[in-house]
Length: 101
Image (cartoon, rainbow, N blue to C red):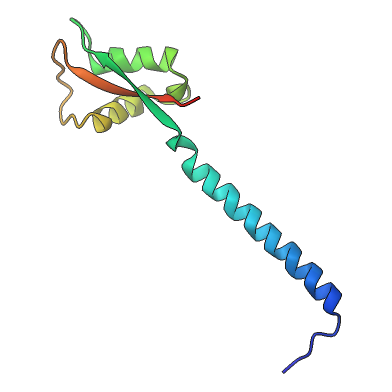
């Protein structure tokens, strides 16, 4: 079994290595959970609304979707609201994600 020759250097090196690993894991966790800071607003479908028009409006006005493709927004809205088809009914309630402040 090898002995540690320079204990001070070993402790400093171990501490630095621990801090690097800890900061790396913290960054990964922060990236993973960053989109989970989400609240929801409720909208009601009106005459003439389609998922495409709703998604277009949300892309323009909702910072949650600012860099997303319209098709991805539609998929997200369908998924959140458990919609299997794109047919909407007037008065239907939809949950739309918004960034939590």
